[in-house]
Length: 399
Image (cartoon, rainbow, N blue to C red):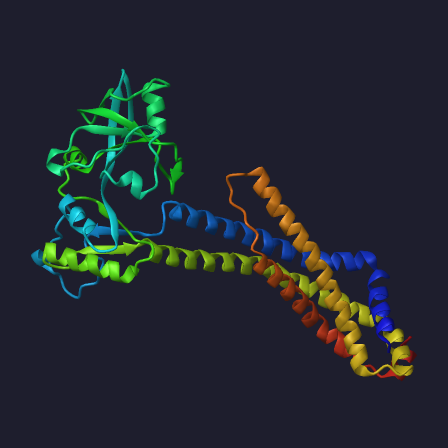
């Protein structure tokens, strides 16, 4: 059998029953579209979450009070955790490869000015906070560098809080009341919106020492250590650990590099994206069953044609290849249609809901197409083997 004849027979058999072929391919198309759409949403969410974490850089190490570990017995009084202090932050800032540190403590309090009152997040930070997290101060300046014991009552407003309290008026030099204490406004941060659900614009920033007094806390919630991006993270972490052991007398802090968090987060989100794609791929099996059914019917309807081809000298392997090619062609056409449909729906979804991050992972899309063709071939094996094993005389007699 010539290649041209082989291709003509394959295409003719599918076009002879157009509606049946379209409905069969539609089962595969729906499966591919589901895989593409679901993985597009999953991959988009992964990129969104990772971008949220990395917008401030990846060279940040978080030092928190208390050590996350499992103890076989109760450690009693020896397990008491020493609070993190501003002096701890200053000591870590002097380590090699550390560019700056930021002591952090936060809570909620009422902020009042000009007869207006608003309950917002109050963030106690150091003078390097704006530089560490790449925040601009277009109006005024950020908190000055000064000794913790002499921290003055200065405040920097978020963009939303400035609008709510002062409108379009210049707030510099004005007084605001935070938790019953008066502070002088020295700056306004640029608008940054929400980061992982936290509105940075609807907040007020005051010196960490003042925030400790405001919330009646003994220690900081965490210390952010910003290190040289080219430095070995493990070496920096080890130097931080040694310093904290020297200051506290034991290892009682949890040190978390942001890069480690990102690696774990990316891994988890990647698994979830794969799982979502696999769930969508279940519908491909339904399409495979459809191909199996149609190919079985096709073999029964074309018994005479099979007998004639065998009588004219067609080998069994050629008959087998003919029906397998038909099944693969059905799956390929359905897969391509589903690919176009899935990408189109993902694009439309992103257009209708701009806040929903949608990003089509072409690796998954192409893999789904390959799997669709493989399912089509697998579904066509049994009908094709049945056709190849037919006796030409019995096949012609049946006709």
